[in-house]
Amino acid sequence: MKIVLVIFAVLAFLETAIAETNVEYLSRKLSIGYVDNPNASTNPYDTITPEQVIAGSGPSAFFTRPECAPFRELVGALYKPGTTDGVRHANFQRYLANLVRLQDQPIVIVLINDEPAPLTNSINLANMWINGNGRVWPHAGRWSPPVASGSGSFGGYFTFGNHTLLHDSQFSRAAYRLGVFAHEMTHTQDTAQWRAHLFGPYSYGSDGSHSIDEVIPDPIAAYGEAIANVMHMLVDPGTVRMFYQMFSDAEACIVVDRRPPGAVSGRTGTEAGGSVSTAAARRYAFRLINDLQSDGISPMTSGPSWMSADAFTRLNRTSALYRLRDLPVRYYVRNETIMALTIYYTTNSVGFDRMIGVYRRAVRATNESSSPAFGNFVHFMAETAHGGDLTASPGPDAPMKGFLPLALFDYFTRFSATDASTYKRALEFGTGPDDWVDAYFSSGFRERVRSSINLSRLTSGDIERIRAALNLPN
Image: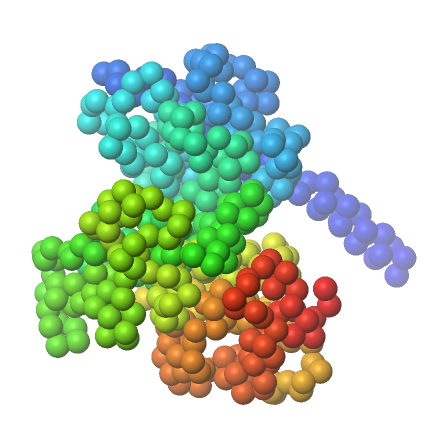
């Protein structure tokens, strides 16, 4: 018996000794390239190796250009020990390695020196997103199936331009830049299928963009941004304060696009009694304004105190502005910030390792399908927090950690669901039986959570009040 125990101990030691570190895994999976002059006719692409990053030198101009300092900071956090702007590199590396393991495919990262001049040629390195100033905006995505490039095959990509990192005010903090890196890495892993059969090309809105205070037409597109925002929040807690302020401010507003879409070409079939193009228009955010008016909710005719009259006039030409507190729950679930706050504060309770396990399960459940991505995530998070399925309606003194994600979503939608059926529809569950939602409402815990919150004065201390209402320790 002692011999067997010794053998197992030796095997365990050897397994630990040879286990791949996060840095080693990222070194294998990430391919980093640098383009010094994207307007050059040949566009040379320099590979930046982990060994060069650790040494701080290499043959590329990447290591000597002053304008590449933000790039060197980013890749240094990937491969070196230490801390950047309060962000521990070990945590940053752990988050990214766990993300990439979701698909376990190589990712190509292209760092583009667009500081000297805007892009003027027609190249498209790894699907760059070029803004109106001819500069490269941080942008990432997943390739399915993987795409061959050079000597490798890659399952995802993202591109950064240093002009944005150097001059856009929101990128002034290094922790924020690292958070954006984690956000974009998340986009290389998510498999939730944007539902063009319902929304045409308008998942994000008529201009193809999104913001944290916007209603996004397709809830799955909002969810994709939300989970990426969570990774940003984990890296950069300063973003948590910004997101929570957006939600809790007494004058918090949300934007709905006014612009109707054009026809959706090249599609056939019917849905809800009309052509697909008609259905896309009906479900587009533009149509949601009419639905709000049917509910007796009108857009604001002037902006909040913090918005200038000129800014409101400009926004009002293309978008309608609503008070967040006035919206029904089905609009909240189309906002990436509300989803992100729900997931982030649940992660604080269950831990990152369990959250990434839930995300892995949600990725598989929503893989290239139209299933309710955020609803699945909330449901799986409830089971994980509880430690299994809900087998019976809980008593009033039971510690109900499994209700936490449901209670947080309830709170971050300002308890606007009038009943369990409305709540389930917001999660795209339909109105049929659901053990978790039904028990949350019928057991009395929903009312206890609601009663613990003063909706006229929301504070971050509300999270602990919700935990106390669920009999959870502080």
